Length: 477
Image (cartoon, rainbow, N blue to C red):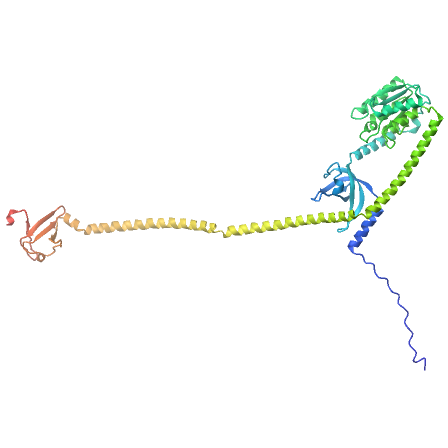
């Protein structure tokens, strides 16, 4: 019975699914930006500028491209004010910066800290092309390089007679082994005429054979400054020279074609002087060894400190609010461009509407109706003139007919035929003999002139006669 009323067994527990970690686009872009900025160090980028723009904020936006790809770049105003030139489309540049991401649009971009024209890059390509060419011809072959004499009888120096390099070389030679004479071949070491002069000096020293070893030297400088020692004419003159040549051009980090062709390459002009003469004392060599070790140690420590400082700088930069400000500044520039486009679009719409209203106003203008009315008025005036002329002609014609008829019925015509018009003394026309009395004065109007008379007798009937008495006739009495 107890088993019948016992509770049913409970179902096995269901495993709970963990909640989803759902990203928003802004969170994804923010973390992607952090990964890019933390994962990639500051680097150099070379390419051609395109789509360069400079909004009112003063920031620079453009793309760097090569033959296969391109990347959007931004250089903010606090950085580009330090640039020595203003970029233009088509300009080839080298830029230093960091990889980042513009969060509002998710655009992958490169933020520049420094930019320079890439003329040096072109020279480096020419340097590599000539280096490969001469290496293929065997000019760099170590088997052909000659060893230096232990104690040369005379040392030749090919360099500028006024530069710092010759002073350093003479100083080192005097300090290390002052008894060896030195012969200087003065040449230009920079400029268009430098390479031919250097090659001519090397060939002259080889023909004269006055020296046991030659030093080809120049002080430090940029790649452009050292370019005379990268010319093919100099390299072939070194290769053909029968005297061993020590190349001491530039600083330790500078390499030229002359260094590869020469029998021995020295890091500096001073180093070349040290190589061609022996040391005067053992302690000087020991001191030099300690100096090199110390220099190496200091350089290593300095590099470690520099790396740590770079790491701390990047860490500080990641927490610097300037990055947020740069993002907002970039967003502000984007909004400014959108506002300008919207304003131009609105202005274009308003101009179109204004043009339509002007056209409509011109169509509704009373000037058109006035012009049409003037045309109709001119037609009506011409029609009225024609009608008036026709009417006048008709009236003249009718008047002429009426005048002819009137002239035909005029009493004047009758008077011309000998008839007269008789009126009484009051001017009434006398048409019957009974209208006058005996002795009454009357007048008879003729075709020409008038007769005054007095009635003498009257008759009636067909044979009536009217005697007219002239007032001046004495018989009237």
